[in-house]
Image 1: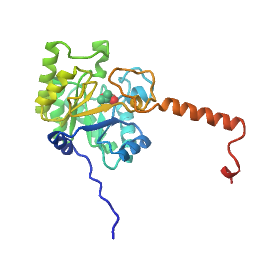
Image 2: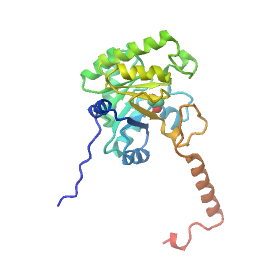
Image 3: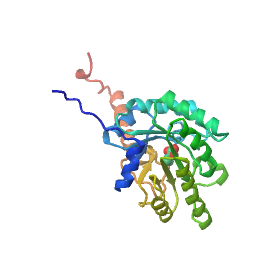
Image 4: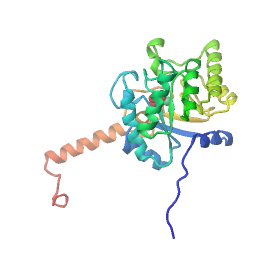
Length: 271
Ligand code: KIV
């Protein structure tokens, strides 16, 4: 008798079915093999290899410095760990804004060199050509509206976006355009919950929120924030599910103490 259990992989189609059924989509970021393995084992639907790696992995202040090669390195580590989740990879700043051919080339490099399942890019109407072109090569694209951290120097602040009516109207129009261009889903970051709910009700593809309230089709958080590894970032929308900073700090203190006192290694821990 075979004990082989086939794992049903999450696809872009699965996410659209989940929206249709009203089942919420869970998404977290990951950037390395070990963490991605734990998230996949726990049953996460989508793993985003976010350009937030620039902040939480490399210590940069913004997401701008991370390169396409670095994103591919993180993505390939994640892909090697994942059996079930859909793996989506951010196109980093400077790898797609030039024109749709540049966007296509970057998307193809990510898919070919990392084995990921889809790409994500920030922006609305201005990236629709690129979305269509990438899609025409068979690569699924996730959009990203609201607070778009790659444009931080244009806006100058990380405050809530689309609070004014004109900006809210523009965001809804952008979401429609991204859907028409062929995006399979859109991240809505840091916008009023009422607006996010309206967008999710109007647009057929799944809306994944971060700081966008509970009326959307799924939620995403940055892993290091929700695990409490990163203590400095405390926005209202963040729920911490662990205090790993303290857990790791205390484990390190205990290790140092045991090494200095020669308690570690003991007789059973040696050959
Ligand atoms: O890079 C990232 O982690 C993201 C999420 C905040 C959605 O884009």
